[in-house]
Length: 193
Length: 358
Image (cartoon, rainbow over all chains, first blue to last red; front, top):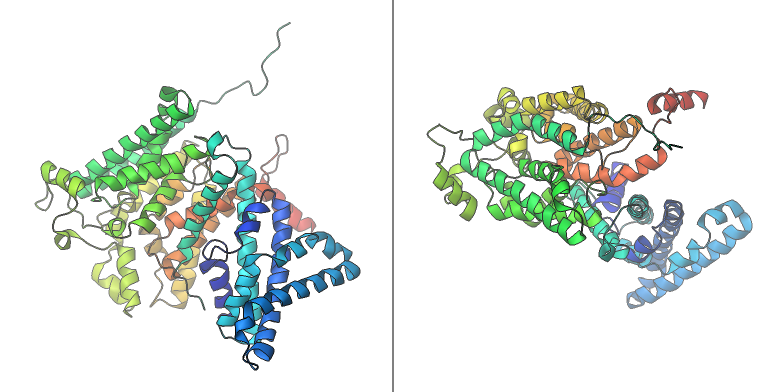
């Protein structure tokens, strides 16, 4: 149990996908203008990332390794993640309209998010079991959601600030992101898996 | 017909300038004691940091096309520089102070649009940038050598230290209490043994220990902070929540495992907690508006500080804790609205009433 907690702390805070590994910067900068969208995006990513970690672990263990095909890892992961997410989207659309409302258009968007593929690859490299991989994916996406929500809150306030024209918009966004990244360095050295 | 200006019609006695002056006044006893402890180099670094902070503020205002003199005279840049100087190693070279002021004023404040617009506490941002970029200079602490004692340095030597660095480092350096405890714990020594050799609660309270200017006298900063609360410059929520959280957590962990976790008094008296709780976390720009929000903010700072101090890679986590909670401030404000004028209940009471109603 404490092992799992350490994995979650390690992936969400110490090795945060966005602020430490610099993965998934496109949704981080692109979909963080509004708090509500950022939260939805976070939930959708949590869902997809966990699913991607599970499916890529399954693929790696039962197909790629036994048949010595690990050089096909990247392309097969992309394919599997895209397929799984697409199927999930169709499934959710039919079975749970309210959940579809929440995750909505984000699901297909996330398929091409580099954080998803990155985390899937990293979790496979960890060479851990099925459950650990799932927790690894889940922890990473919790970290993603956390910084997404924090950043969206900051940007909503930035929109009201009297930022000099040459810094307004993306530049100040990146500066704030870098300060956040700096603040997250405080977590470095925490016990993690 | 005379149209009266919009409300409010009664202005309070405080404006930015007077608030800053009160804070500076409350800070000065602790600062003076710190400078007295560490002698001329500390004074020089302090003055350089303050002067460069005001200088950068003036330059930025000039570039932004704002009136330079009135804004510089609101003392906010002076306070930022002052707080930054309080967190620097007292014998650090001059460029640490200048670079720190640049980071605080330009990156931390003016890029966001100047006073009242910044998202992060400028002084803590600058300290963190310096700590991450120059870990050696930022962790070189020296043992106290007050003015008038044989170990103290004269003004000329002091100026040389500020200008060129410390000549014989090994002879003067001395770890801060938190840093020393961290190192020794890492080597497997048990906490009571470490504390027995180098820790004296009275010294930590009075400030005769090594550290930055702001890490010396817990007692004087506690007094200064209480003064600010009495003058209603700050409210009690953030300091009480922060100190309370640290004290409770420290008590619990000390009770569970006294060989590895220091007690509440140890955590309250050492490091920059007192300065941070009263003077840094309470910055009105970067902390929440409502009383409940302030309470959550303070508790969060305390929790993060405790986590970083005990399990993180850095011995002291004040700056990181404040920055992280600054980042959460817009969210806290978003979900916890301040009391609406005309409604009698405070946010805390409304929260509990809502809980009761379900």
